[in-house]
Length: 269
Image 1 (spheres, rainbow, N blue to C red):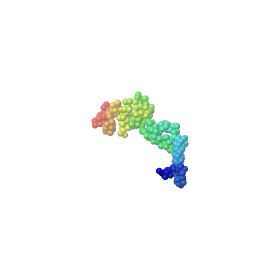
Image 2 (image 1 turned 45 degrees about the vertical axis):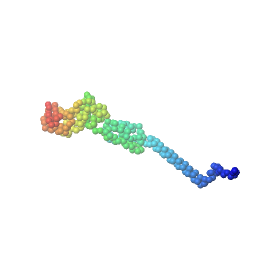
Image 3 (image 1 turned 60 degrees about the horizontal axis):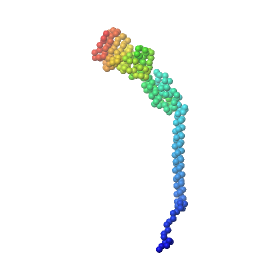
Image 4 (image 1 turned 90 degrees about the vertical axis):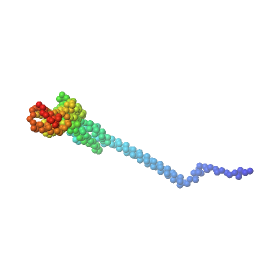
């Protein structure tokens, strides 16, 4: 029989304090330094992010302050519109922050009847330049009942309404009223094509260009003659026929030069 002293004794577990004493003090110090370094890096990143947010917020508030407001507006290229109307259309009447001025301002100006194209540029710290390209008046269209005239562009855009037809513009008569400024005159396509393409040979003799509901065009001349062009097909040949007849024939007032069929023009009493 074995005595208790013969039984191998089990190793006792070391207490936690004793286990810690086995770690080299240099390793322990190195671990602590690593932890402190990570904490410092996290702190630097947090401070950098906070500083960036402060700069961005400060910049935003500065750019939206009165210091950088659109106070000086320069308009270039406007001959037929008041500057105040253009500034209002661009949304600059209340001097908004310059940083907010952009494409919307140009789009607002382009909604004006006279404006074909507009560009808006910022001029720091407080200036805006608006450059407009105006539509060119092409004809004066008589209002229904002779109550006035609408000045229209080549595309039929109604630019303005006036009591008297402006000098130097061909007069156009259509089957329907031209509409209010900013709208597009309806049923005047053929008449405007003719009014804006009359040759020098007799353009100065034309007092009016009329278009009927079928799109047929006729002219009235200062001499009392009428010219029936019909459609706008073969206009160049029709113009040549009219010029030749006016140059070489003896015509009476009230006669009609019919060149609807350019191969066989006729003069009707």
